[in-house]
Image (tube, rainbow, N blue to C red; front, side):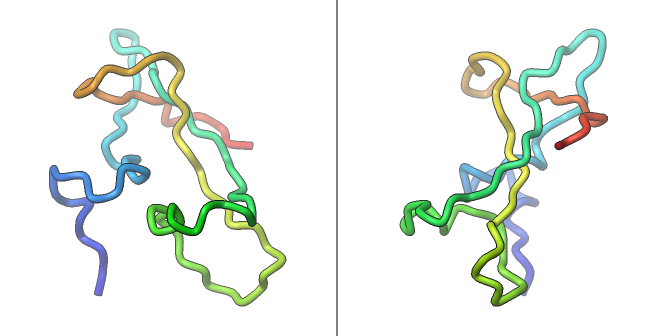
Length: 90
C-alpha cells in the first residue's frame, strides 16, 4: 500500500513537507534551501518514525541519507515555502 497522505492538506509528518515547496522567483525569494544530511546512528529511536525513508539494504554500515530543508530565515506559520529548484546538493 502506498502512502498517499502527501496528497492531503493535513500534515501527517512534520518532517516531510518537501512537496509543499515552490520555486522561488524574482518576486518571491527563497526562504528554504536543500542540504544533504546523513542521519547519525545515535538518532533518537522515537523520532525515526518521522524519517520518510525505507531501508532497501541490510548493510548496517551505510548511513541513512536524506535531503533536508533548511530555513534561510525565520518562517512564520502559514507562510509559503520557496526554494531554488536548481540548487546543486553536495
